[in-house]
Length: 310
Figure: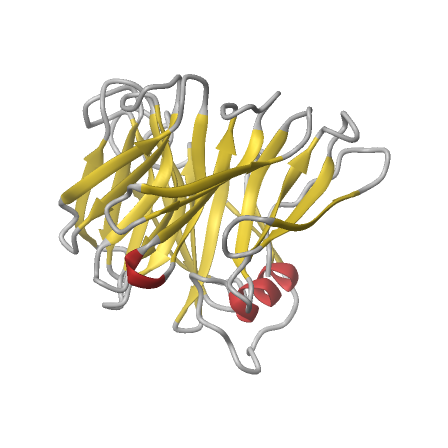
């Protein structure tokens, strides 16, 4: 996402996406809103990274340098469906924080994830914050080691645990590894797992399957990849690998989003420079075992790429 001096919401697009089938948002039947465009932010850089609908209100997480500490704080905004701001909250310390993702929990609250350099064990640690729907802090925790550890996605599992995926430079055997972290309902670390080889790997999104098995979508520059490729990893309930597969050509592929199909397979989307160095939208459909059913590149002569899916 581009750094902007203010957060701009194009809700005629966002609400149509969120009210369809987002795994983290509630559907809205006959939503009571009109198309509109709003700028929210201050005099410095304020960036939105994730948005959900909960109880017919919008919750946005991102990063602000206009409010809180100027090095950057987590930025939580609540609006109604016509874009009127109900509150703005910041979370963080004196050093840099970045807000990355938001989840509505089954107990009616919110989990925010991002990075912090104000607390924790290393350079960038995973920062997990639980708040109520008024933005009041319930608990917070940090997870990570001495180097950069960055989250990308969080889900609440059927057994009540939270699972996070992202990347770690602190643990594992490579330059950067897929990082999986499980927390209990109080934010305490239950276990963690890493996956990867000597070069870079990372997780972008994850979904729960049956028996608390997990499918992680991400990227790899290992396992025979010429450059960075899309990566699909299936694990059991404690994070042991059941199988993994990579997808892409000789160029650079960037993982963005994936969705489970009605037949149990997955559609992956992202960017690819394997056909055009300016990048094409790259889509791959696989079955439940990761076998390719089809793959296609889409776009023209300029830069194209896939960012999200319905």
